[in-house]
Length: 102
Image 1: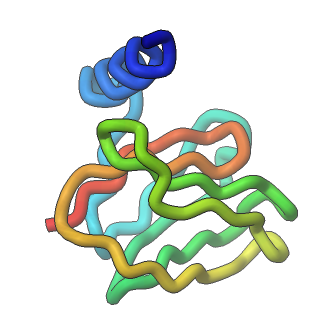
Image 2 (image 1 turned 135 degrees about the vertical axis):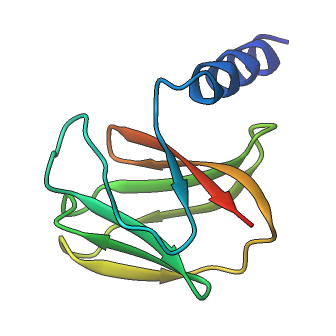
């Protein structure tokens, strides 16, 4: 029950504009901890530049179901993913963003 409430609150906070949406194919400044980090999703690949080395990568559906968990390998890296269209929560280290795939 608590997990469901926390997931709902996180989804609500992310959807109300606290975090700017990240659309597929667009590079965007991730803000928060590392203002230099750029994140993009293009052709099934998550591309991170200037990220934190060994940061935990977590991608969740809007319902809080994990679809990917891993660790960053270096500050610039790519992760091949097979995500369907939809809205996801992307967390890299302490930075959380929305990932919108159309």
